Length: 265
Image (cartoon, rainbow, N blue to C red; front, side, top):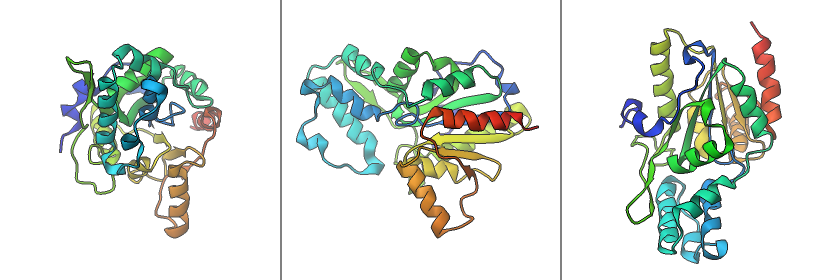
């Protein structure tokens, strides 16, 4: 298994100007359909000829091997003459989730939160979107699949790490990342975070939240797979899912909750 320390060079883009040692809380963000209101792998198809994929790439794919599917899409775009500029433009056009800008501005204005991204997208898509949105300064680290253009102009994806979790995509287990990062930061800070927050939408956002405790909070996007799975867990295995759950439709739902948290001693 590749540890976090071995991929920091790949996944660290920025350092917040505020001292991360002073942050009381850790806030982990998913990217697709959480920070942005689309799946970036689907959004990049806008750069394709006629803005659609061939039937062979439009068919269902195995969830655990989605990275390979994404690479096939990027290879098709390259073979179709789609340039880096066109891909960049398609990513920059992706809208933020409803109320997302307000949430990011709320967090940027405070030094209480250390924010990171844990996403099964890729470094090029995430960095491109965050810089265009002016949100890159918020995040201390971004853990995602490395991506870079080769000499032929094709965006090449590499898996983030290997792991033994049978529930997650073969290229990324977000729980491994969460556990290693929390442990590393606790040693650096000399104390744990008061609370950990996690916001996501998809099935692969369940595994990391299983490592959270009763003092932590999960924000699943209402009506999306993550929310539905948590609801099922509460019904079928009462008490198994430890963190508190605050579903959201808009970023304002999360801001309102965080304002109450900040008022607590």
